[in-house]
Amino acid sequence: MTFHDPTGTVKLNTGASMPLIGIGAWAGLDPEDQVAVRHWTLTALKTGYRHIDTSPIYQTETSVGVAIQNSGIPRDQLLITTKFPWNGHGRVKQCFETSLKDLGTDYIDLYLMHWPQHVVYEEGNYTPQNRDGSLRVTEDFNFNQSYAVLEGLLETGKCKAIGVSNFSIKNLEKLFETAKVVPAVNQVEYVRKELVKYCQSKGIVVVAYTPTGEYPLSRKETVRRDPVIVEIAKKYNATPTQIILSGHLARGVAVLPKSAHEGRQKENLKLPILEADDVAKLCALDRNDRISNREYEIDGEKGRTLWGWTYEQLGWA
Image (tube, rainbow, N blue to C red; front, side, top):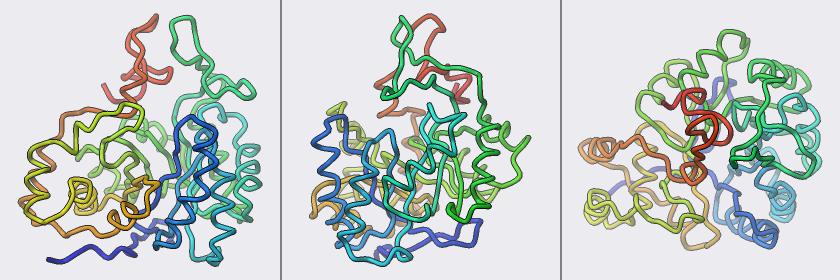
């Protein structure tokens, strides 16, 4: 049996190399868990991870910065991804400088627009709500305007590459109406083959967050228990998680699994190379479903919304 290179990289459209397997630094809503990120991120760095993904919304940038400092790994051997939050439209430069400070770094390798919609800014509150429980959004700034500011950050030298997250083909097409720089990546939860094909045709690397389809807050394991995945895992003497991650890599998709456990961190770096028939079986499981984001759908005044936008606005309808 052969395995994917745990240090394998993909070339971004900037010419930089990005590790295909990164560690996600989302830790839930408990402040103690967010602080604990510094410990298991350090473990991940010692295990061999060189790509760390965080965000102000995760409230783990400071912890990631501490882990990097304590690791002793030269900064130029790491790739740090962070994002400006959905309430950062109109404040992109300010958000960027705050992230630099919280991470304790002079530059950010990959800076993303976390979501296309503009959530109303309230200091200390990332989720201001309407009466029906949906997020309060505004059209004061659109993602085209915010992306233009991202493009300007490249000229400062403190931002090496820019990209987007949670963008559909529909919204990428809208972005290209004004964009001068093609996004280096599109980080998404649900990786549909049409989106992968479209992004790759544009020179955009697709990165999967929540890549195993499991979300801790839901306490469900709907994907890892799928009988097809379980059967393939037996064939390769691997775990369902390893098979799912391998399936992403087989399609040219980078992954950001999150684990606070050293054993599973090591396990997620040892991924078997799947036969083409098995990759096809995994792709055939596509059900147009989302696990983590589905938990927050609201059926309110505007109809079915997710994080303040309808599925039509998100381009997921």
